[in-house]
Image 1: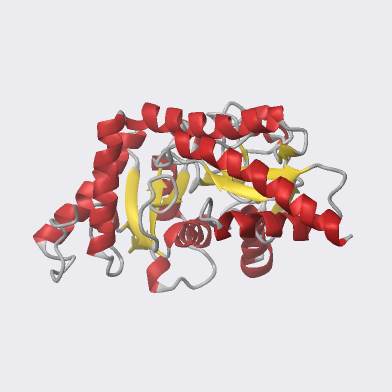
Image 2 (image 1 turned 120 degrees about the horizontal axis):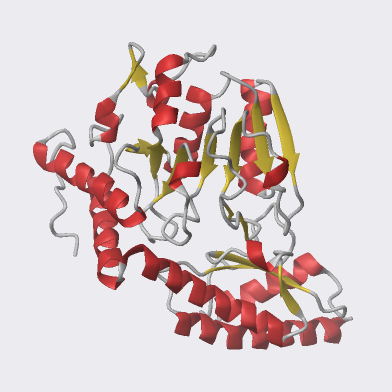
Length: 355
């Protein structure tokens, strides 16, 4: 499957550049990204892409930092405590979301589209005005390829290969609108930028970054893996089918929650429920220690090879987090629900026995 990877060759050679260019244009094709948007492969996964955008573009005007889960809170920390620029901070508790109608989009707005650690997503881009003065910087790492992103409302969009496409880690994607490019070419931050953050030279965009001449050496094996994933996406029906698969997977868990009164979706509003990172909470009054109980259920599922790594994120409320992206089969999620019910009952019985 990966036999065509140009291993042992320079990423600067024609064969390497062609592969990187194919990854860029394949991304454009599947996601429906406008032709005048720039797409670059950058270091350090989605985190690297977000950091590049914030450190290169913020500071030109006031910022608004929006957070309702762990990663959004991380971007707040970077801007408020590291860059120390003028910024408003708007937050919501886990399971809820900030009201986008109350955000001033004449500021630069930084937010996650899909809260990977809370299971709460932006339902649509309707509240983002077309005539905004500020930039929108969107961390879409667990939304891309599973949710319909409104490109005309997003100036900077980032994601990584290892989420919905199930690829390898370490590479990020940075997508820039013409407005974002204009900011880069007209604004110089007051702070120094390391080499891996620099997107301009002499006041002009380094266009090579967005045509396959990456800032530093990428893994051509990981690139090939991503190309295989893109080809799979084409074969199953493109973005509409990828979104449908994620929706179908998530609905299995939503329906399971509706049928059982001891478990619920962490997302309060059904309109904001994530279809990729589905976060669940236990609601049974008999549970004595929520955190210990959730960990015990997750461990039991792993011990029986029924599910791996389904514990809630370390900063999130106690519970479970089940990945439902497009590479997952709905039949496997259905099977998980049977194991989940068994594990819940087994751990609850053990808790009662030791009480």
